[in-house]
Image (cartoon, rainbow, N blue to C red):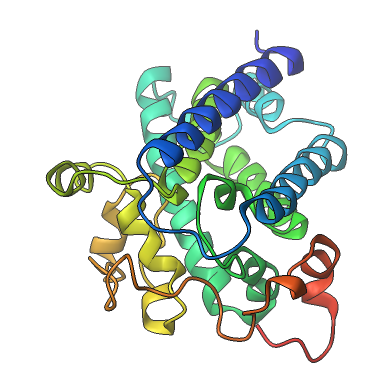
Length: 268
């Protein structure tokens, strides 16, 4: 049975392994020249990542994976009610969870209350592997509540939920990374996976571009729902990253980012 220690070890090993791989790739084959001090950005983004880990661990002491095991034992959820075999249930769950993350991401852009928190992610003036974990703690908490609801509603197997969380973290770091991917390889990967060039468009300062390419794992949802944009208008080398109202790196310190949604007059 999966214990909290097992989950933590698996997730941390995967996280640090992918992080180290993408960070090294960014050094060897960067896609864009960074505009802002890397040490300052990394300090901020890594600090937010650590804070979010603490929030997730102590705000939700009952883990989502444990809840999935309980759902199975109690017969909660559609897949458990229908007695869908574990493998099929796991695959279905991963696809549905990915669709839910797409819908959540889209909603967080369109509903102003949620944008107050998600907008912090878009204030980064560069985009690299650390941007993939730069989310406001309130957004992380809301996302966890949504996932818990989906576990109970769908009856997601514990193993597939853990696998999905690992994939979500890994692909978030991958598609936010400042890495160069051969154009032919990128074209092929976009059939099955959100690539860095595909997701980078979403971080453009141009509204119609950052309101596109909402997917994290699977690239299909953007095409199905008409939110796909192939390339940024200015090209990847010349596109401007971030939000128009937040261009001064000195105003994007850790305390200011965390209080950003709560300060009256700061327009995201």
